[in-house]
Image (cartoon, rainbow, N blue to C red):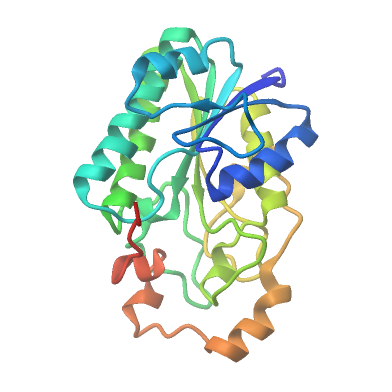
Length: 269
């Protein structure tokens, strides 16, 4: 696919969106920013809710691709998840279809497969085709988003790369995160690969750095041209000294989704 120039970034005011605002322009993208709240220092950003289909259609008009980060990123009552993550994602795909946008990069999550047991020493890495096992309504919405992306590819020819993001922060903050961490720089590299790879159809990839303690298979991401350059291992000694090794008898440490399976963090809004 020719490198897209104009990319709509939804959820641009969020944590990951803010990181990508700063990192993706280095790959020569002209970002069109969208969020439901104003973005400081960005007077041209589009302020719109995912429920506003007319505003979404206007927002996607003329863009080459979309990175869809908007929505609720923690657990919440089903009704809120339904509106923001399920209906909202459908609205975005409909707008993209109506305006002829060729590709979406969808921020899925490891929580779409959160009840998958994490690998133990000597186990194979978790494959990308492992069945959906969501750990929350949030994870369920990401499973829906992946299936919606497949439908829009099969029915309408709209390509998507669904990125099952681990934890994208400047540095890992827990022992679990050593296995699922994606550095912001690697996140930008992965999104760039997802935007520019040829003939992706609907491709699902895991989103992390090349961590020494990696739990999942990055081969489908590498096939897009993703070449991760970072590794969480430099943070391991300090985190393990503070928190100890993971305990397989602890349900929150036995599954891929971590504490989302037992005591998920709740969306505060």
